[in-house]
Length: 210
Image (cartoon, rainbow, N blue to C red; front, side, top):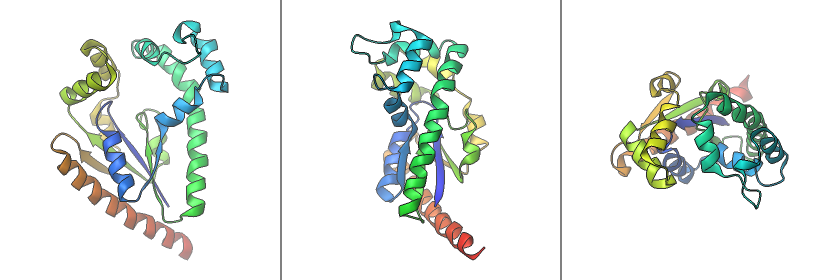
């Protein structure tokens, strides 16, 4: 089994690359998806967020007003830290549970952890390998505005709050560009998967022989 962190800036193309890797045979675990499940109305984490941030960030049905909360936390580092301290330990615990479940059924698995804040949280140190998706600022802001409905100003504020891409590159074992045609991104992602599959098999063989 090989556990691989997949990260990059906001709207860099993590979803696109992770889907390509899954089609090639990787197991995909999405950290944002886990976070969404954790904050469903009346879940324990939901109660904690409501206590910390107040009712103003929840609609009448109890659902989090994500855009409003995002606007708050991305403009205030202390608020962002509060949110991360609530969510990240629980996300990490669920990731470990799912990894163990996959490893039990497929010892040669390549498990992709799609996690936007992989490096910021330090969780990249627990990965066997790290993939960083490369995209330029203009493309990321355009994608973010298009998919989220945020204004360009809001998108730029989110972009500015991120760890610099150069810092993420320092911990990357593989870099997959997502700045040109989809065909180029797909080709590179498939090449990376073949490398990862070999590594997963070699790792298991070493564990057996040791």
